[in-house]
Image 1 (tube, rainbow, N blue to C red):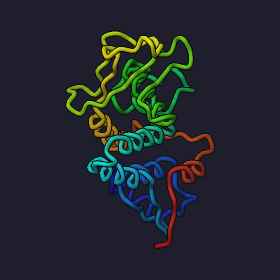
Image 2: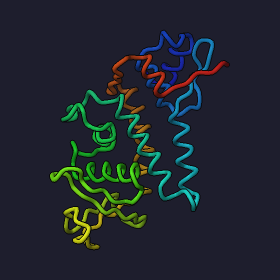
Image 3: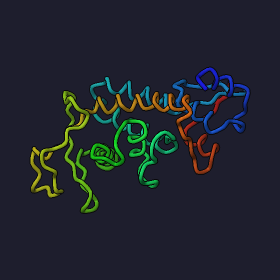
Image 4: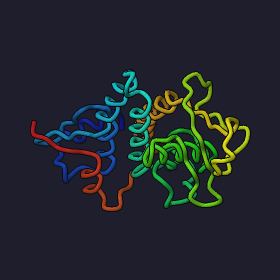
Length: 222
């Protein structure tokens, strides 16, 4: 099914009649609203993407806000989507962000880049310090610095930081190009939609269609 097929399929159905894949189409198709029988359904994703695109061009909001919002997109996609054309992510209980990076961004299963981006996200969530100290001895530690001129999304340090602040040196810095991360995340939505059209996208929610609706959509009258 393609765009027109999904639009034709949903426009004569009530909310209760929509399948998970039809709800996924409404979530991913990029429109502010999609018409179903008697009402409109709205996806949160276009709102998030608009705010990312606005914030990233504003001098006083371009550092943290676009990247923080980008991680919410990864969280949404990894929460309910996977793929049937590649191996299942190794840990079912892994973060939705790690699953998104694997299924939609070409990252390896919990590879070095995945661990770095997940640690960056946690540093945003807790202190916005761009520092991430592993909770356990086997977890990596990071001092992040943004570098928009960096040719790669992530430049790993010459020497890994051991988590001791007395030992922290410049050559233990992990450089991040935030613009590259945001651009990658914007592309993940299109990738997921294309996989839906190719029947390669797996849509799951523990409590089915009702949970999907309440998490990611809202309704309004025509």
